[in-house]
Length: 153
Image (cartoon, rainbow, N blue to C red; front, side, top):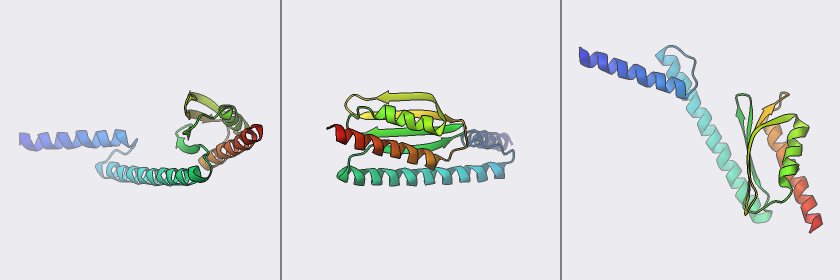
């Protein structure tokens, strides 16, 4: 009897952990498992998109070494990552101007510009903007920056 209750308590604990990890609001076990399954599918799609972005960046790096951009949708905004193997003077200003044009407020940012360029920013939206729109705006800012930096050389 104790063994059965112990197993039931352990299962309940694991389901509650699964519920919290997947941000599920479900109350019954079946719904928690369905939400977890959906969460896993979302993660698989994110991995696929990131792999495609990496492959596209590697292909474009062979032709034109532009920084790689990823944008993820958060609860209240976006996580924007920009990375380049080389230093990119002036790129930060171009990207921040793109954020401003979109009405994105930078809530948190980490930037490194020494030997390479790395920007990780959390942007809070002031208007309804799609993640793809944010990514395209950042890519356009990079292209504009690239064109102006080539003209200066």
